[in-house]
Image (cartoon, rainbow, N blue to C red):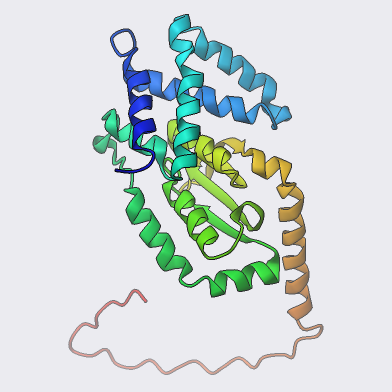
Length: 267
């Protein structure tokens, strides 16, 4: 049995206690957003007023005893992440049977995420080289769900001897606001520097930005800007000052088409 299984069961029970009064899908979503606002409003002062108003709008829908379960749920999530870091909220989401396969919504099992992260990092030599050269590594997750892949990556970095809280920055995006709130809460508890975006990776649409406490307190806006400036300088340095003119090659002769049609190659 997983070390955090007990806490996951407690979270499910706390949410189930209000099932007979409220739609579970909305209750879970509102609970995740309320917890995300709690973390965000402690550090992201520019968006604090709008999110505080949103929090008051959420709690207005529920009775006092239901609202009192929210901090209890957060406490159980915190204890579960301390016992065994992983996709705790994704597990809760699955146990409540809220996943929507009709919309193509699937949460990758955390064990698979760990395996994929381990294959990506290997023995950690290349990762340590990146950190030594640039000061930190960057990861992008275009469909983050509840953040399982990022959490697995952070754990594998730690196992490889690299402090992810200091040497990793994550940009994660998902079209589902509820998934973004779940990921944001878990990243915040693990102190992962990240920007979690409600948006569409395919259309490049971005609707909301959630900055984790580790991102704000670690001064990552400045670190990322400095990294971007350094990369731009390197690009200028390697560009020759007066490039030599390149002779235009003669056009290749057009060969007659073979009798049989050629195979279309993609790569």
